[in-house]
Picture 1 (cartoon, rainbow, N blue to C red):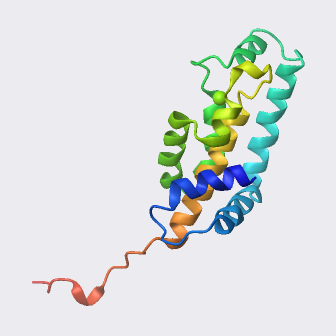
Picture 2: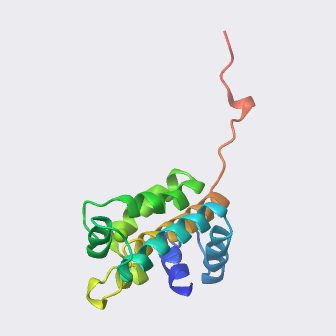
Picture 3: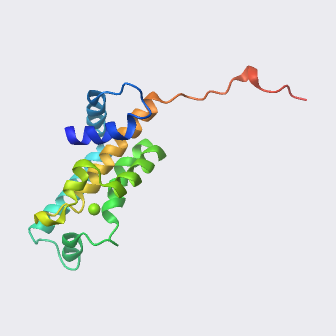
Length: 153
Ligand code: MG
């Protein structure tokens, strides 16, 4: 939980002056409160657990266990979380997928014998969504100033 909040802080502190870890933690909890996030997490974690116990049918078992690079369903599932907060989350998710920052890198470590094929992306999805949520809360809204419109004619 705290490790996810740290990633959110890393994503947003540059844009939100004075952003605290507590605010990041609160944003992560708000994301986890969403049904979309809960459903994606339940689905992905179940597949990781089943793969680890060799309970998935082949060839899916082999694909999930090896975290095959061309298997993109783990990323797509995680986007169900990120999409709740629009395109800002999408950019952060792409960045986290590349940098494997913090706990995401630990989860992506294949030497442990654990299967985290879905979990690393789900964590990135939660962090990206929590960062996007903060961005939307703190972003300036651009309202059209009616008086500033050029005169018609
Ligand atoms: Mg993955």
